[in-house]
Image (cartoon, rainbow, N blue to C red):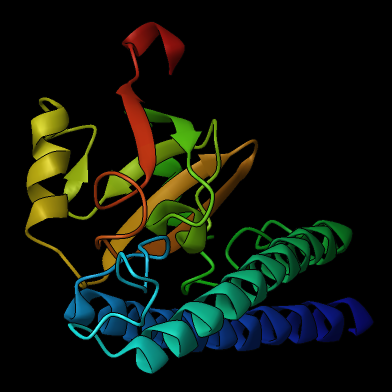
Length: 213
């Protein structure tokens, strides 16, 4: 069927975009590691009180890393927008078919559209995402509902300390996060790490009361 071919092509396009996203995230982690190694952020001064380049850091390396991070952040935003458009197309193609298997045919990969995700209950709501933060780079947006954060779901969530513990023990490591945005469900990869702002994520979440779910 033509519809089936279009659906498969849409799925493949999203998977390719996800691979590009992962490559960008790996490069971002590498560039941020350079800043961390030098003990500076994106905004720290690179000159001393007399206006000379600091001799306690590799100024050239830091400047290059900062420029690369800015470029990669822009690339990441663009690829996330493409992924979101691609996922909408996958949904549209699946809907055109009108078959009972449409939901099963959506990508069971990092696109986050697995059937099992619809059984998860949201337990956190994102009410703040700082620009340039690890959370924003991962694709998290304000008002997203958290379905799963690492090993935590609504069934074993007790308090925000649970989230803090995972974050603190996952510096520079991939944390799988499943979110609900409107009627769509996505699987994202978050890398907690120091950045120019506060904390390791750059976002704020609040527990969802059962009445809100």
